[in-house]
Length: 274
Image (tube, rainbow, N blue to C red; front, side, top):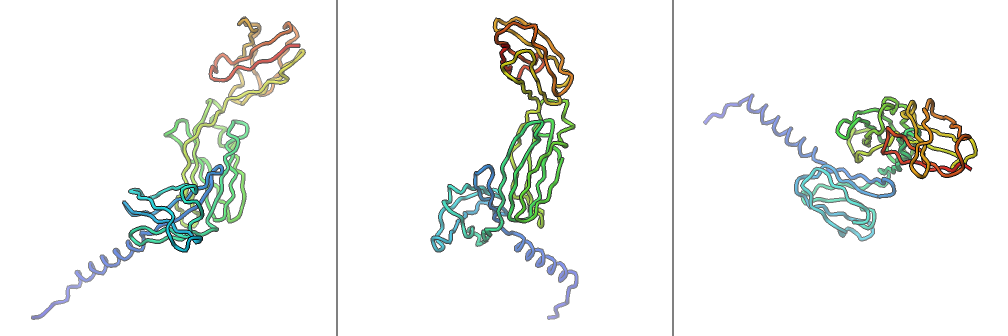
């Protein structure tokens, strides 16, 4: 019997073998540790479907602390569930990922107002990329800023300039992502949050003749109303700038309420004419 060499078949077999080998190596778990507003969490990515995960720690010599079953590609678990830092994670397909202590980042979400912008205090022990998205609605957030943060670098992200386009609205939706810079792998995706863009400040709350009012930019050219405690309107004033002074010399002593009639969701403020 003569066996003829099939060149095309050998090429296909070589391709299938190479692809299968690549797929086997491509299925790799990743382990990330992070803290957001003091809530320490771990995320395991690249999980095969319906895998049982075992979290091992160095302190117990290889015995697993807890296990979870997931049918998704990633799993988040809080530090409280594990009790201590894992040394590595193992699934039932014998895929292992080590926990590297230097792969850690910490995020503190700070003030979220129009004047202060959306502030993130980020401390990282790996090279990460932060991407911030804004939008008019929860489902329409678009990329506004990308910031690369190097290892052991601390940054405060203040994205005030990117909010300028939203001056005509009262709130904006925002979310942010954190990527591993070298691999461009997503390691954290925040929830969508709302920044209140409309706010104002009055002082002093006990005034003699002048009341100072500071407003966010989107409240310029809005009217304010002043009422006494029996509900009578005693004055209407136009806010022509971010900082205005209102003459109270014609008002008798007593307590008054200031509000924006076209912004009913803004909390009215009380002040006293002495």
